[in-house]
Amino acid sequence: MLQTSSDMRRTIGSYWEAGAAQPKQDRQLIGNAVFDVAVIGAGFAGLSAALKLAQTGVSVCVLEAEHVGYGASGRNAGFCCLGGTKLDERQLIRKFGLEETRRFVAYQVAGINLVAHRLDSWGVRADRHSEGEIYLAHRPWEVTALQAHAAFLKENFGIRARLLTKADLDTEGYGGPGFHGGLHMPYGFALNPMTYLLALADQLRKAGGKIFGKSAVTGMTRKGERWHLETRHGFVRSRKVVLAGNGYAGNVPKWLHGRTLPVMTSVQVTRPLTDAELSAQGWTADTMAADTRNLLHYFRLLPDRRFLFGTRGGIFENAPALAAMHKRAGSEFKAMFPAWAEIEPDYSWHGHVCLTRALTPFVGEVPGMDGIYAAMGWHGSGIALASISGEKVAGLITGKVQPRDLPAPVRSPFRKFPLPALRKLYLQGAYWWFGWQDR
Ligand SMILES: Cc1cc2nc3c(=O)[nH]c(=O)nc-3n(C[C@H](O)[C@H](O)[C@H](O)COP(=O)(O)OP(=O)(O)OC[C@H]3O[C@@H](n4cnc5c(N)ncnc54)[C@H](O)[C@@H]3O)c2cc1C
Image (cartoon, rainbow, N blue to C red; front, side, top):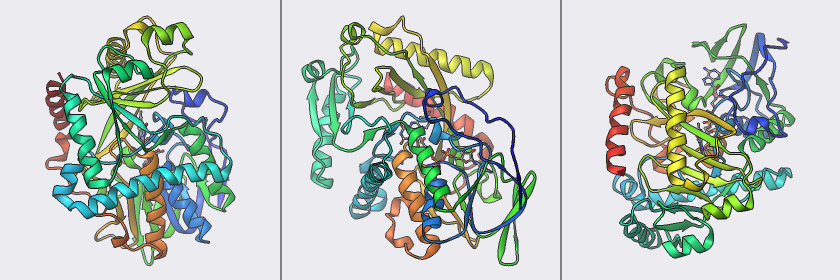
């Protein structure tokens, strides 16, 4: 098996890329190689799967189209929190029953704990802050909905979420003219996602796993007992394959075609804010926050006092569409944080999250494709969920985890969208509908 140094890595303009920990370009696969398991995608899911496999003595490689951190795992906002589906708990209960929904909530919490445990046990300082997360009511009547939600969470899941009045928000440093009350969830923390991701990749290398950069998998065929994964300058033959491309997965293998919906979301980060600027806005809390809109905004004060603000992206990814997306994000930021209206972002970037037709993730073996597994579809909340699901998919491969050990909401294989070519139109329709509801 030959390797060569490859092209320069593609930067994305994120704040994380400017930090001390820099992603590096792993060497490209040149020639042929044989592994027990090949993982497609070097994000939290793929690296977590590969790490667990390598630790169990399985020979494993990760094939990455660009470099570690090129996908959403290197672009996100660093909220290690609950989430992973676009169905709320009531909808989940209707679809899967209370017990399976409880198991799913416990699975999300276990994902958060796993990330915390990894950072602690690896001795990684990832700029952690924020104890839990706060949801902020963007309209006065959303406060009532938050109250009902708190009662519902307590009754069904034993979650003790704390309600905050408008006065509490002002006192506790969550100032903004559009925030009318809040609900503090006692789970999760914020981190520098790139630091965590690079540490994960290092752990994999130490455990004997191999990462190939600039090695997009362009085709897959079954030859005898092994899958044959083609890349530009070589191929890997492996008994098992993990699909972990999430919002960056194309149509390889063909089974994926039309089964996922990549959706853009954008983030901007200001320069460090002064004490005077923070108190002018009344925002001094370090808790990670999101509003109650369907098309939600997510934001937090970073440890270096820059402010991170995220919102949904647009539909198309060409230059004019991206410029319009960042302009809209800027206007929304200024409307929500008027005291900072003159502060232009130092960093703006965007990335893809992965939605599915059922609005739930899938962790399991792909039906009809012997030895192919998937861990994808985190609906914009993948730090915790992709991390734990990567471990679980490794367990499915080694037989240490059985499908029934996973909660039902992550067990259903993706179904095709009807008329997949129209997915962007559906998305446009959903944006209009949700945007109208949010007003
Ligand atoms: C802007 C933004 C903000 C976000 N904020 C948060 C947040 O605060 N909290 C949270 O929990 N989640 C957040 N998310 C979502 C979270 O980042 C993702 O759910 C998570 O990182 C997905 O991890 P992954 O490993 O599944 O996929 P990714 O990290 O996207 O990695 C997939 C990788 O697969 C590679 N790939 C795809 N196809 C191929 C192929 N054929 N061959 C080789 N390689 C391939 C891609 O290049 C990519 O590197 C955010 C996402 C974005 C974009």
